[in-house]
Length: 74
Image 1 (cartoon, rainbow, N blue to C red):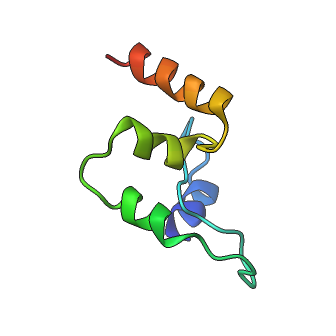
Image 2: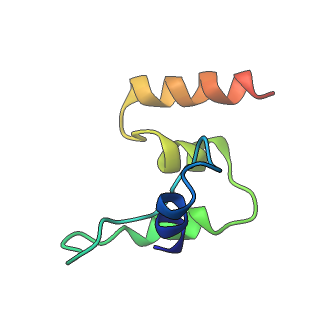
């Protein structure tokens, strides 16, 4: 919530912001899965774990995109 508040207060200073693991204000009707939090707080994650965080890990097409993304950063 602090990051969202900072973003709205300092729009002229920020060009891009990535908010991970955030939820909209109000009642949280579907909390995040514990697996997500475990991976997100690990100091290092594997390609498969990164796919869980940033891609639709159940989709082969999305996992292929995760592999391409990983290869582009090597």
